[in-house]
Image 1 (cartoon, rainbow, N blue to C red):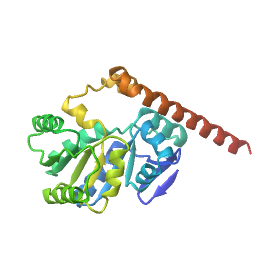
Image 2: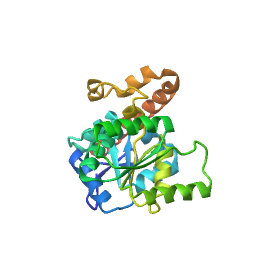
Image 3: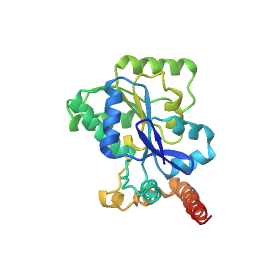
Image 4: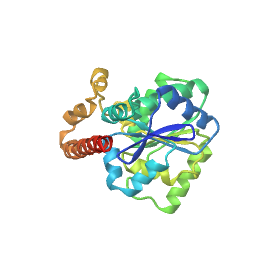
Length: 258
């Protein structure tokens, strides 16, 4: 475990993941947003960890981030096992929801970037029903193809001109992490990669019940809902993550014995 300024970070299979509480996470992000700082925040699950071991650009984005929260239950469990600290799961959808509540109370403007126009419209309607005072500075559904330099410059201009202090990015891993990392210092607000949060909160994808999430089985719920799309990803990444964890435990055991 390493300290980085005011951060306590554990290198989980080569990926720096923050050891922190919900209070810490919400407090830091709120402070950065109030100051108008350009920051990157990622919620890191098993898929993201394994992708980082094979994709150097994704790994660099996580390594440069200002905060990497333990999104998936296995990631939080691993931190508990290796750090002997009571680390909670701090997942992207819940983090976004709590930050929107915090933003509505503080008058902090937010921007929604990603997904489709239809999903964004449903998401905005849901957020406005929940918090009528929430300041939604803008929304944008970017093209699913690679953007031109001119398009990218216009996106940066629109987001900065909106006055947003928090930018929620729902583009999926690793696309959102790479995009956010490439725009650090160009967009003057806290940028948060929140994955499927847009679909969950918009109601376009059903989220697992609380008891399923608390049991660490949300991935199984998602697999049952979308088996054709997700079976290969979960089988592959979960297997690699288990192997990496076993190897790490064995390495620690060997070091203690030597």
